[in-house]
Image (cartoon, rainbow, N blue to C red; front, top):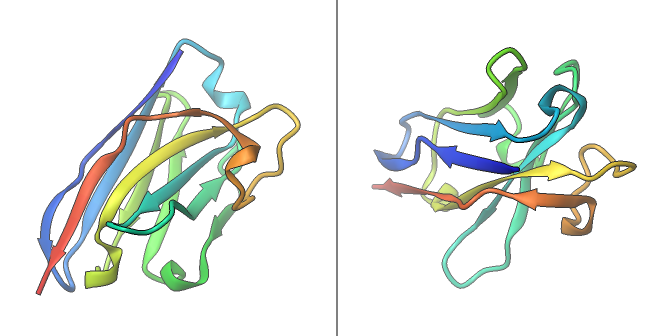
Length: 125
């Protein structure tokens, strides 16, 4: 049972990256998935989440209009398309599974029960 985040890298401000979160070992299509991020010296924070069906996405205010979360249940993968990247988007990005009975789109880490290892996103000027 695991989540594997990938797709991070170094990009200039204004550029784009697409992160992927690949799931294995559980019934992926029945779980909502979220993305969190942790910048250097800061606490981890909620970035985005998607319902199990993919019909609803949730975003923190600072990424609305720039980030898009999506999923492909046939591939057991959730994506985070990040456009118009800013210096303040620099962070390690983690994907996480919403626990059974958890609230989709919740910003509290207590609503998530399985975490990926993180992928580094660095935005340069």
